[in-house]
Image 1 (spheres, rainbow, N blue to C red):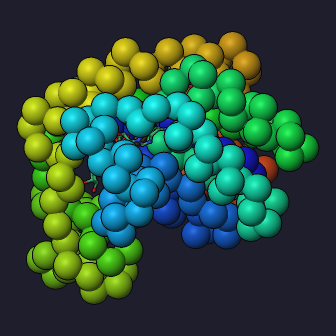
Image 2: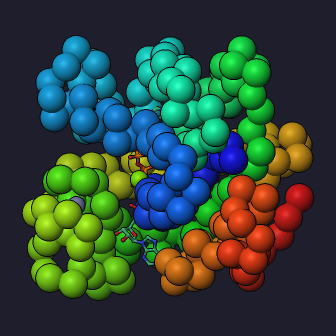
Length: 229
Ligand code: AP5
Ligand code: MG
Ligand code: ZN
């Protein structure tokens, strides 16, 4: 199963990718998580990308494609992977096609999570992420069992630096300008499935399972797909 999860900031890519990766036993590759880890560890990559993350802008394509190329070449990606937050520009999508061709692979599906702006803003404003394992929660919409603590690993929940209001506005604008054109790109390539991302998280997971179909054992998915091109 080789899948891309596409969607604006706050659409639920991370929330869903963690679940799908765990169920299908494939790696979850999230460029945003990789960049944030590099920033935390103050590696040379981290120092290079910090200003883009802080401003809510995209890291240059060469840098991003380079780290994804390396990651996809690792042996654990042979049986499949789920990409979250990559590609995000048409040149990145074209580069991904080239990287996969070089590895003798092709994408199976691109799942686009469709969520309206109002819901996105509300989700990002209330998001809290685990400092330990990176799992996302929401103070109202998806609260942890114990306030301020991660359900999965017990880590402390914090607000992401780029979830401040002006940065969120910039990230949403960047999505419209640079990433939304990918919906048509993948529709033209016959890979796109749109899923209603405003449903509750479990319903979204079921819809994604159905969209990616054969990657799961028969009967494990049901319902919820908006449209299929
Ligand atoms: P990245 O980390 O990828 O951020 P993003 O795309 O802005 O997306 P988010 O992680 O904010 O949202 P999400 O869709 O994962 O939502 P989540 O599941 O957390 O990128 C960050 C930065 O890194 C970029 O700005 C850029 O600088 C750089 N970068 C990354 N990739 C790059 C690339 N390819 N090229 C260049 N630069 C790149 O959910 C959000 C909230 O909603 C949570 O609180 C969650 O609990 C809640 N929620 C989730 N699902 C539901 C639901 N169904 N109902 C109710 N609430 C829900
Ligand atoms: Mg995310
Ligand atoms: Zn955790």
